[in-house]
Structure formats: structure tokens, C-alpha cells
Image (cartoon, rainbow, N blue to C red; front, side):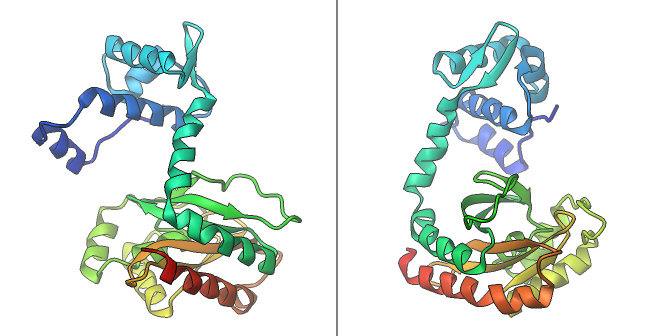
Length: 265
């Protein structure tokens, strides 16, 4: 069972800020725990994964149950559909999603492949919008789905917004684990790849995050040129070569990103 871990920065904030609400932090982290698994959890599961006393874990679960976010039968606890209201609030209030969604719809229609929008969250990329042509059924990569940034096209584009010094330090701190036999795990090679992708204005990752799947991404910039997100098109290797992917998919991706920039504040 995954454990809740704070970063050093979060620990500092907890100790130093008089306005930090420990109980709220714990409750939100317990909600995150359910998202990391694929089954209901017992009180013992939650207490162990959250590194909390059983009594504290029990109070949190009962509070979440009272609020309608968790359902339990006395032994097993699971999330309810009410947690979707939190995601819905984020998506409806996020300017990037509202601006870029029509554009990735057009990219998906033109390329006849799934097009996704992602942001960076620590060492992971989070997909916050997607568009799929009618002929494609796609499972797995959906809204809220997370992947390591270092081995994904959207992640490398987003990491490219860092200066060389910041990027070197960030990669040095990363946990780099091979996702497939093709994943680049040498940090020096990875650093060079991200810097090269930055100069090209796009990133193409071939089967590093998932066997048989390659992806092409470009940065989405706000009005002042700052990279705030990335959009990508992915396809199975048996449908398209890397050269064809650049020829066919890069122009509509760049057009979408360019169209979004003056609208993002």
C-alpha cells in the first residue's frame, strides 16, 4: 500500500506556518491515498499508508464519510462520486482547459488520434483535458491520469521551461525508473534530450512510457511566452512511424499552441 510522503518543503511549511491546518492536510492526503489504489481500504490500511495513529485515521474517515466523500461498511472504506465535484470545480475554473479544449478537439479531428493537454505537478505530468476522434477508443490515459515527467513527451516539454541549472538540479533529485525496455534512465542523456527538445520546440518520445506507444508534444505558452502546459498526440507504433508523426502531427499541434497563446493570461 502506498504511503503519504511530504516533501521537505511541505514539512518546512507545516512546522513554520502558524496558519497551516494539520487536520485538513491529513484529510486531503487520505483522499489522495484512495486514488493511489484500486480497491477499498480498511482502517488499518489508511493508518499505515498515512503514517497516522488508528484513532486519528478513524476520525478522518468518519469525517469524510459524514461529508459524503467516503462510504464505509464498518470495515472497508471507498470514495464516493462526490469527490468528482472537486475535480469538476478545478476543470470548470481552469482557464487553460477552457481555452485549449476546442483546439485539441480540432487536432484530434485532423490527426484522427487522441490529443491530450497536460500540466506539470512535481515529478509527474497530469492530464487535465483530452479529445478523441470518433473512431478511436482509448482507455488508461484519461483526465487526472499521471505519468512520470522524465519519460513522456509532455513531461519533457514542460521540464524544458526550466533553466539549465534548474533542470540539472531537478533531474538530479528525480527517481528515474525504467517504465519499458526503451526508457532512458541515464540522467546525463535525459538532460541532453530535454535541452535538445527545447531547442527544437517539440518532444518525441518513442515507447519510453508505454510499450508500443509513441507520442509527440509541443509546449503551450501564455501571452508572455511562459510555458504553462503541453499538448500531445500519441499513436501506436504499428500505425505510424516517427518521421510520419512529425510530418503529420507537428503542424496542427503547433497551430493549436499558437492559437492558444494570446488567449492565456
